[in-house]
Image (tube, helix red, strand yellow):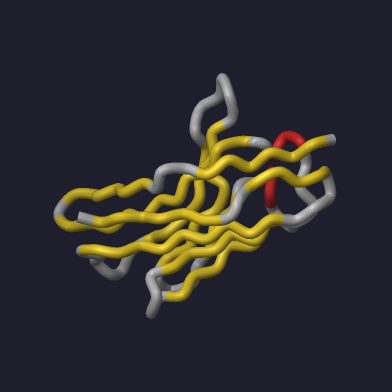
Length: 118
């Protein structure tokens, strides 16, 4: 099994910054992809950013230029630096890790609330 523990999040004013971190442990297979998704009330969960073991990144268009994802492969950690936050960034943010062992195996963190006030 794989466990993901998130930290960070909270309440910030528009234009402010927050940093989310996620530590993975357990039976992790490499290569893998770690990332962040978010879900706002009444909306579907959406990809925010992801990064693979080789450091290749993908971002949602809505966060490009404001958010930066990074990872430490030795520590199995992924971070999301969020700058210039907007009220529409308000959501529960979930850490995700996936790899392939025959089929795709997805693991999720418990979620952390990010609230941006206007």
